[in-house]
Length: 156
Image (tube, rainbow, N blue to C red; front, side, top):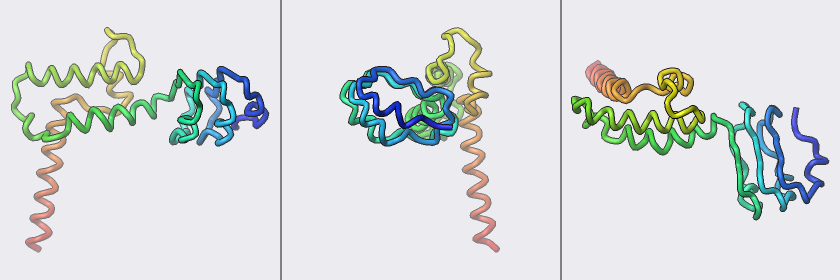
């Protein structure tokens, strides 16, 4: 599968839909499409990254990417903030934990473009995200286990 090279000869092309193409990467020839305003690359699960050539397209206004990339971006930004000093969140009141959970839920809805009032549990499962209170417990358990293993290795 892939994209026919003839498409990139159409320099006046304004909208390009490359959905369901099984692309691993976008061809570097995409920089020839100087009039391109909208690029849609949904449902290409093999697509690993976006090329820097996209930044060279002066008229590009809309870029619709796959959920996998959006999830990666969201996870790296928001979950790094949620996980920072994770042990301080332990034994927080539920009112405080619910605020953090609301942030994660809003992010999950945005990533999968789910309706605002849809159930969050299936969405979190589809993204392989743990709820905030479970993330805290997991992080602390992982830290404890690592410390115990290091202690055991240093003793033996």
